[in-house]
Length: 190
Figure 1 (tube, rainbow, N blue to C red):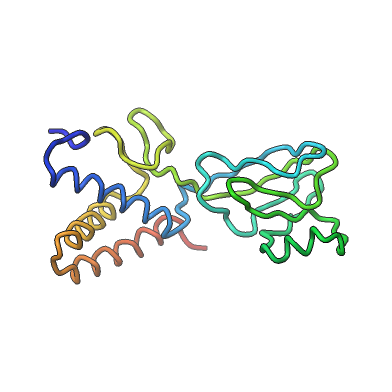
Figure 2 (cartoon, rainbow, N blue to C red):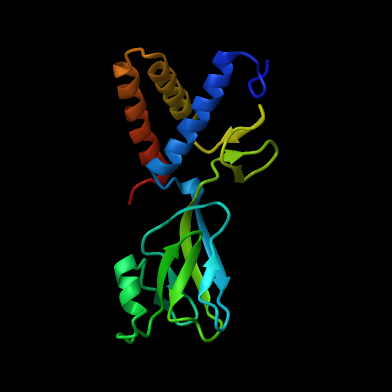
């Protein structure tokens, strides 16, 4: 009657495996319900800004300076970042780099600009009664998730069979087919 907090080892294992499937799916694809737009103002003299708490990864080519109507250049590689910091270059557009849990700009903004980018959230679980994701794992029995039920069930079966050392050939095939269908249905086509 209850999964979270159950003393049954099989149920506890299945909960852990379901959470693993969810984390793996976050990494597998930029699901529509996980992509979030983030805007923030820069501050004169401040080059480093915290990423959102649910940040998993940047959506490529979405980082814009809306004040100046141009795309910011980045992410800079560590090598390019060090070259920029030598002062041997002159750049007009801001360059950015993800470093630790922050975004860093070069040149340091000298005025307030409105920045915007899209990112993939690591929150894939929807708490009971909520309409948006707010967690990285199932923690109560009434939690739901953004992924299709069929995909989660097949993923859980596959992980369970793997953990028990059973043959997963058929389950892997079914899971990968459902993953492809789910990805195609998630974004639609042009």
